[in-house]
Length: 369
Length: 76
Image (cartoon, rainbow over all chains, first blue to last red; front, side, top):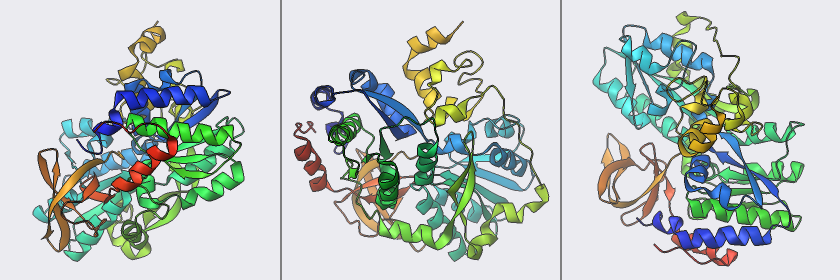
């Protein structure tokens, strides 16, 4: 298919890998931000093709993985109410909370629905006026405009049985948190292309200026990723640090103005806890006061405080910050598998642990006792 | 989560007061919301995420990258 096949062409991919190996005079450490990129890298073996020139660290770009356990537990508590229909994206339902996941809640009789689009949740609310419909809204800046449009639509239709349990997160503050950590050894970032499709690249300029790291907005197909790596390596070899766009078919510096306006109207920037990482300053988005009638946490205040339990042996936080490779985790493939996960990265379709488990069976064998 | 798929706009339409389009994904056709990319029209390729168009894809801009890198374009 157009815009896909040409970015998977083996000849172009091999030529790019060879160019990267030729141009690197030392081994550079790059972090790809998005879990979708991580999966593409491991599925195609891109990391091994450029191993001599580049070490790829896997970043925190998995919204499902960084959604706090408290939010999942709150979603379960809401779903347990007899008149509540809880909707979210399929990926979110597999993630373990303190007491199983949302599929387990459904097995116990809760009304939990998988939706493809936030608008589907609005349609469910319109079609089921006797139910209280809560959409567990997770996702990076890529997803937020769709959720904003859905809430606007719910208001326009006069729906009074639709709410959001919001856990939206923003990428640039998380990169700032990673860069400011003393243990960081990242030479350059491949920024998440679809986040940049919406937000553009201007938010990265202060990071580049402050930390002197190249940031290349990069796509998701194998050729995209190697082009992003090559652009980053060229900057590093020349001693440069700039914001650059590899994913030009989908990213402009100013982003998507119509989508940004939707986000701006409905959401505001807040500090938000990221699972495994802690509170990220300005790291999230919450409904503005004008839209608080749609805030599930306000409306369902009767649920009170939720005390979440995180298995102490899960090192997802280190994985999400690029400090630990999944196969090096003592629990990987032993105490933690996709069937019995300790943390979210083992079950999310963008989780780094899930990527190694699926695409690197040899690593898994070595990890097993 | 941030997965997005390219598709070609067949026709624009309205649903419940929102801008929509019928979009073809290599034979599979779906109605996609255009509130996030109101400039899209028939024949345009859009990048679709959770039922919404993230933006219209820009083919000419894509070619610039190949030229800048000096690496051959892939076969479509």
